[in-house]
Length: 270
Image (cartoon, rainbow, N blue to C red; front, top):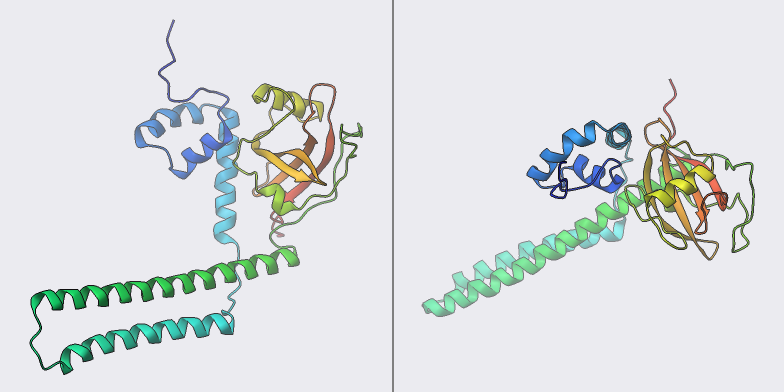
């Protein structure tokens, strides 16, 4: 009998976050080399890898609108750059107009002070640039989302068993697609009582999810003031997910369904 206790990770099944780390190259080389053959041999893990590849390709080809920075941010950057140029000129001027021969210690102290000032100004300029980039990305994302080109929530798809959860919510509660996508790549499902992979699969089975359906992420969100478990399921379409929201009491014979909707990037039209 072979002792597998020395194996770096159990599996299959492999946790989605482990497959995502492997796909992103975030694992040590020796650990990744040992995991790749085992992950490629597992059909469920391969589906996760395919979905990650497709999502990366979609993100790489997604259009980003060229938005100019706001006037206030542009003015702050120009002022910072002007300060950098002025500080450099002032330092050189001080050294040129000083007719006295300064000591080596004084020269070193002056250079240290000038270096600190220059470093502070560069840090301020970098912070301003980061603010511009963040703002541009936020504006672009909001614009694309409002046009329906990035995130598109289809009408809610609920199971035939529309039983209220223990907190009284019924199926069909709307949840922001952005919030649902926040659990992608995570393994943070939480239920009342013991929480493990078997409990998650029992909950999915109670909601009519086939055992072969890949789980691409799970986590806990607050929906309508209550703690809910969100599970992102693969659909076979790049960048498209089934978002299942259930109560934390979900288990065999109790779907505890809150909502189920298709979210993600809109498939391209040909």
